[in-house]
Length: 236
Image (cartoon, rainbow, N blue to C red; front, side):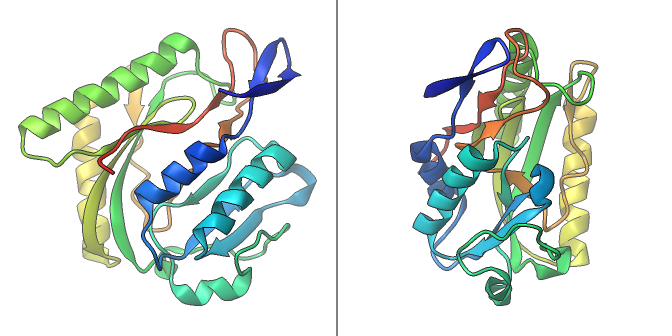
């Protein structure tokens, strides 16, 4: 992990372009249109842009994370309708008034499972909490594999863990019901007082941590440091 500056009493991580490019290569396909969104960019409001050029996408993510140092940098996990490129074409726009709605998603490629350790709001996870989420994700992956599920993408969100299972579903009410039902089942089996499965992540326009960028909840302190998100395992 690269580190070039201090934040609080700990060395602050920086966005990693190699990891950003890897995340894009794993999650997206040529021709996809992806929105980048930074919801809490201080005086810059919401920052948003639409990309079909993946190198420009990677560079924009890296630059934005380093320049704005927001709590999080995100992208749409499912591809957007190509018409949205007209809002901000392969660039980021500050104080964006419009972002992607569920009806603006072309189709569903991913079932996104977000595992977050239980802790007070507005702070980063401790190392123990972080590891508990990653261990729970590996448990879910193993249990579901035994039941015939395909191998997911396993990722470190910076504070918790992600599992992404590839889908091929239309962006329809039936598709939404399918995804929400699966999330509810996974949560019922694997959520507890230490780690929760987010059952609200099933909307089609869900934004997802841009891998290779930094999670910055609260101050970075030795017992609750900021971390760089990254894909840990994927069939590439």
